Length: 235
Image (tube, rainbow, N blue to C red; front, side, top):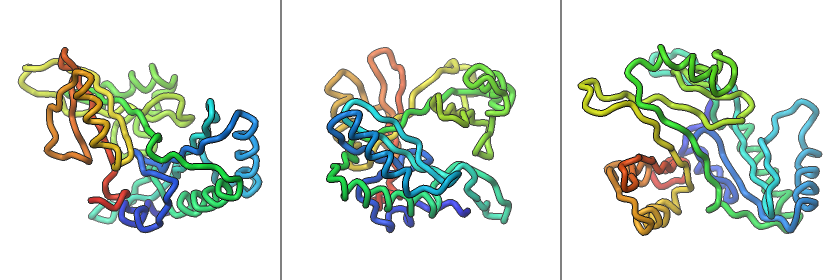
């Protein structure tokens, strides 16, 4: 199934959902665990056996959902087909159905609370080191490149954040280091940056903000605040 461009996700008008990283995410507020189970039972009832389904976590007063297709088709400019993890039409269709179920149960969506955490590692030769990180993080070196044409490490069961590799400086001026990549809804980027600054952080690079904003703590440890502005319809 074809991957869906951000503009088409925005056009779908999924008011309860936000596009973060590869998938679309929603949080619904529930009274307690039993209410969360009741909601998920209603969602499960509309999914055929073996059918496409969301990743779900029932927490204290909320249910978090993610929809993403593991084998979406991405076509390069020269026509090559690659299999990637991304949003497709089946995700949008199911998200719309879940919205309807939530409305029928009187549940409130809290889209500003969704978030996704990923990791980044500066690397000179990512292809050489990715198998070790895949084995360490997932126990399976074949997790390298799963759902992506690159060397990224992705766990098929979503136990851990995805690990991305960024190009390290070639002149040896700065050592390789980890950083976190935090995906949030586009509408809260400004507030999140303000919170970071109020807590003692600094903005290192906002040239691509609100899509990407690099921040740092007092010891220059970096974080990247990310928002999918295309899927939000603000690009």
